[in-house]
Length: 265
Length: 324
Image 1 (cartoon, rainbow over the protein chains, first blue to last red):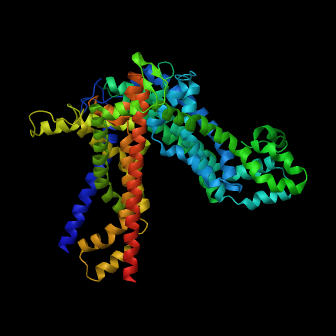
Image 2 (cartoon, rainbow over the protein chains, first blue to last red):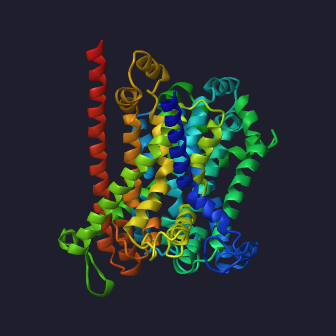
Image 3 (cartoon, chains in turn yellow, orange):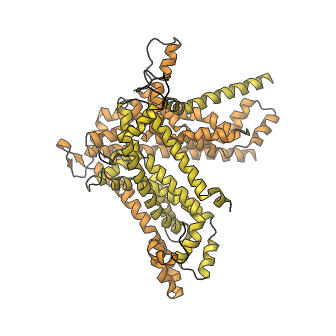
């Protein structure tokens, strides 16, 4: 019985240490974000919101936020516009080479971003589209489409095709059936696909490094360049703000759409 | 959000690609039915396939083509079809070291990540605690934060003036700061943490065969805990460990942010070299060749994974047949 208790204690201690290791950088970022000084030291000598003010005063961060926001929004819309019809074809229609095309749509996930980044640089530089919004959007599109195809396909697979057939039988046209029957049924899947595409693009660092320059610098690239040459706590504050923002987006999307309600019905 | 019923049909024809096939459907029923699905699928697939072609397939073909060119004087690219750049890269001792360090980093990070993730995954898969949801959320919470920010956190922990050195110094355990950043040690420590959530998720989803009833049966038949673990738990969880290993190895082979930031310009791996050759040296043929080598490494890793998976599966079914 005592050895049993001993193993339990050791097991709990091991898990605590592993969790501490896993969460260590987040805890440090959280503490540092309230550091009053202009350079990193641990533990901070004084706490304040000064470095949060620094984030908003930083021109590169403000500009980067705008660039990433616009890029991510357009990327997500384009990914949905191209991904939804593809998912529709892949789940609702039977044709030759379907599984091969399905695999092709998921294959961008297998290629490392460092290689994709180089590949996009090589093809966008001569046009020249590097260091532009359209260059960034095209660069992010390839890695976003697979997620939309996947989430929408899953939503389509769980939606009942007989409702669509019934609508067709009753005389509704193809597009009408899509708008009135299919789209409402897959809306949660479509939205989660769009949100994933948005967040992927907003967070994309390595591909953006290759195709951005001095004029169009998305936020992760601005942060990377900042961290490389300066070490002050404002990056920590920025990270905390971004986490709060993404949590807020997820909560709002869930509230606004009534995701739970839609999933239950 | 939904359009008013009256306006919806009017807006449709332009809004959905499906519209293009609608007239075909309305005309004579039989022939349209027979060749309908394929043509409809084509129309629906074109936008997506075009996006993939432009943003993924074509660029990759360009890399392959570029790897066959040669770099001339002053950043010029000589258009040829030769393996000269491959020979140049494979023959140089610098790139030999880069490849060696890339593999070394991948092996070390994979090993340590599996070691620290396994207990957590095993705990999360088996626990019936009411804290399970919270602990699960904590284990994957780091994914919410960009790897740049987490790497920044590790810089604050491992640096000369970082948490670790300050603490050890304050306790009087060290005289000089430990070298935990700007070298391979720091990159391994930070990468291990960064890939931990991926490994934990991959392991848990691969632990499907783990059944508490089996463990109880073995224990009630008198097997000591260590034997239960070695004979029941470990074999049943190996497939999950193998998948997690593949995932972490592939991610760490191509990781760029952590080697660049924590390595402080002193850790050279394929990813950092590809970027430097492409952006700093403007030597695109060499960057393309290094990319091909990285993809070749991927191929080797995936081949080893498939082989190990088959061996594991054979042993599993073999053991089952022997028992029955």
